Length: 120
Image (cartoon, rainbow, N blue to C red; front, side, top):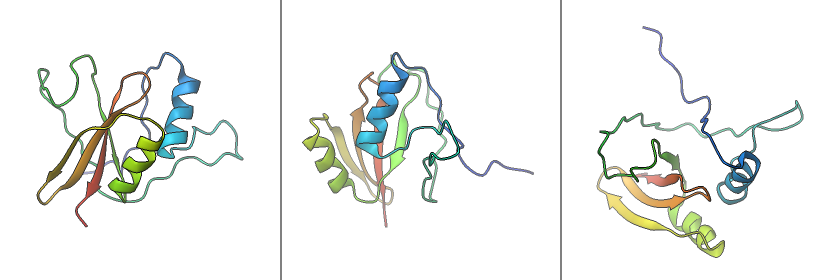
């Protein structure tokens, strides 16, 4: 069976696409989508990508959101310090044995973002 090899992109609607793209670049280091051959796209490091549909009534992320982004990070403490310095609210810090550490933030339009430092 042929399989996909990874996520090629994440696409979602935004009230102000340019501003939200700039926020992701500034605070999470995700390069803007290239519009010419000189621009460098975001290239993620290899690692686990979890694909997990949730029940319609889950309370794992807000009911008004149909999706939640999850990004792997190398050092959650450094990332959280950087976000706090930018006055970005952090919630739901937790550790899961054998899986890693997590923290939740939201982008300026309220989309939930989970940051995950996998177990080494």
